[in-house]
Image (cartoon, rainbow, N blue to C red; front, side, top):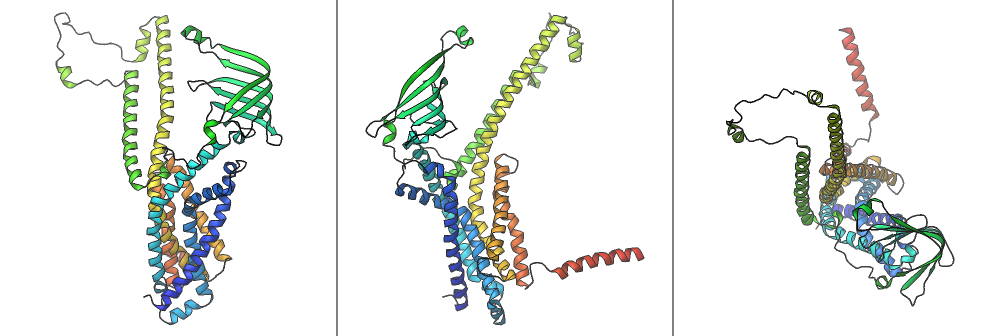
Length: 493
């Protein structure tokens, strides 16, 4: 059994912890709803589906809510103790700050362990559920997917459509319609433009009829002959009325929670991440080595000559005299050639270098994407550990800070907690972005914000243990006085 004072401190902390967690979770849920409003609004979804969507979203929010909750609840608890002189009574009874924090340290460590397992199992499953629901919701109502001013894919079809304006009771009337339609080879070969259009559908039918008025239809032809392909033939037709049917039978029975085989780094646990990191590293190295050999062979540079082969080269009877090469530079080579051959050689060299540079630029973009995926996996792996450790670190920031500022309630503690958390959060965001682009090592990107908070926690704990304020003006003045005294001694000397 815990001593009475430990149980009292723990009960106060738990009350502040769970009340802060609920309040912050509600705030973050409402903030997140605005981010996903386009996925939910206008899709005729019932409350049950929306509730499931928000339920699956909650574990993802714990990455933000839990560290802030620990920070805020620790400031509230110890700030309230200091404001009501309960700390003074504890110290008079021989209970130091470390002893007062004893039960809370055990709770925070257990919370960090729980957070680690939560981030390793629950959050990846939640991330996959959210991804699948967002993807499947977009497929349920293809007519509702059409958004004004942007190109929208209609799932189940090879059609991409953009309208400038929708009107009517059911948004069935369209203005300035542009449609891109892909061929069987998944290439965009047909473009249809119309001034107005109308969507005609019924609940009994699986067909949506799209009626376009006053427009043009452009289509690229795909001839079999290579010479004809170079001419890029196409057809252009004007129409007063053009009718096309969209089959949505495969979408009507869509399960909103249907699972897919697609997985991202956030959907994987530590074992899967570790395995994929090794595979991605090996694959990326193979890509770089293969491309390096390809470029070397294309340029004809750096030929590999074995020493044994050099020694075995002996002059034959037909080649007793070895003529030494008198060309020492490219200028000598060009000077030995006629003008027409010189121009041809330079042109060929320029074209070869240009082609190689274009190939390198294209491959560079591909390799950057590959290494970004690799960096994301390392980030996700280490952020699971960093999230658990951040709860412990932020407790050692909030608890002594509350004892120092000596304020309870949701006023000043809330402001201080938000400022500290925003500092911690934005440092993490910037570090993540730099790490994903390869401008910072991904391990450092995952741990940077936590490592910055570590010395702050040590500093605040030392000051609170010594019963000092956050900043001592007298101490700062003493530093400046000592500096001026040293200068005066040097001048007199």
